[in-house]
Image (cartoon, rainbow, N blue to C red):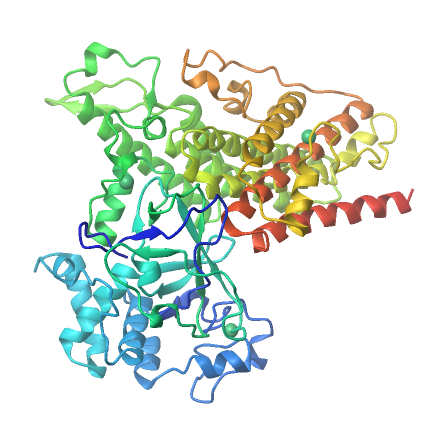
Length: 623
Ligand SMILES: [Zn+2]
Ligand SMILES: [Zn+2]
Ligand SMILES: [Zn+2]
């Protein structure tokens, strides 16, 4: 990845590009390496999940089960050298373990052109003798220097560290590292980029099946014929427009998570790539609306006079404390498998804020409570975790005590809290997306998980419990995909079967979606939130327009709504189902813009919907 300005290392559009179009053909990597933790589940060559039980996979006899291939084709395209096998065996604890293998592979496959037109940032990375990062690089270079001299080894490792991209699957997992040639690597970073990239993981196809040409060019340098040449191994990368790009305009992608505030993006870019981002979003003064919101603190008890003198120090300190607290709670869940304690800790913080005491001149001085703004990036992290933790708790409970009534109802409570947090997360990010359209991929994912959560909730076996109170609850004949008020379904089908998403439709589809979803949300929100006092403070999880004007005027304690008839529950269930379908369709539409209409994510949406259709048909037959 390049970041030096004024060196002509940037890519510009050859022609006008609309939103949601492929800008490059699938580009194969110069070098790549699967991360150690995926060696037993993914193909060493193409990174796709292994289709067969491990022992029947294609592997070569020298392998000793260190790595596997998905097909005979893959096993011939990615031959592992003795040196690589040695690093695989004995250096997998090195912090740059995958980078070492990628660097070695790069050296072996490019014996004559050890730069391949890329920058290495070597001088910057190795600059300081006492720098821990530099020491780790030197130690790593030593490991690969048996195959070459030390200078080439460090240069290759720096090249991988500077240009390497994490190859992600559609679940957002980082499978491995890959270095792409300059027609990708010369694309600069921006925190408000106009393009995004995704990967093709599959066994090697026949050469060059894709018709898309390279639609970008460097400004001063000329790409040679070799730059467009098609090899056929490794995970391929495709760049796609997420905004309209004019001919001659610079094409940019992001190297970092765009849902972080400026300071975090900058420190991550610095520690990983050693550059300071000067993009439009970073240089905006005052900070952009989104960056301001992502780090806003609110506190009713924050007394201006007591903090004005050292407000910044106090603020920084408070944020560190809050970050530690949240990280700790998340660790509780992810590493120690205690979702319940995690939920309790996060909700305490969200509802009550963090009160702490500070020592000042030997005296304990109480500082005001710090509360986070509901769209603070730490809150967004908390919502993501809570949605997942409540979902796990619900399914654990269903698995353990499926026969017991009270557990069924408790599981239903947990599922609805999970769905409510998913919806809040999607709504909150959507609000930010209105100001920063490059957040499109993130928003697509959040709407899809909200849709998935809501549909899971609508299918919960616990609904049958309500039937015992009153009339038998009918199998839901009212659950229909087609909404009479909007054309989301037609649009989604059209994109799947006939055409790409179109620029002109974007505003219409979004506003139709928001209209429908706002109406349905009003009907179910009070049913989703009774289990959680933080959520009860939100009048509406979708509409955050009140944020800019009078703060929190719209935050109030919503009276939880508990209906007590089977008929009422049938209504709730139907609304939850409809809301889920809307979220899924809109998420699928946004995903088709970022990843193309044939992407895994769009077909995942289609699969969930098809699956619903089967369930409905089954229930009709059993009537
Ligand atoms: Zn493969
Ligand atoms: Zn920036
Ligand atoms: Zn609708």
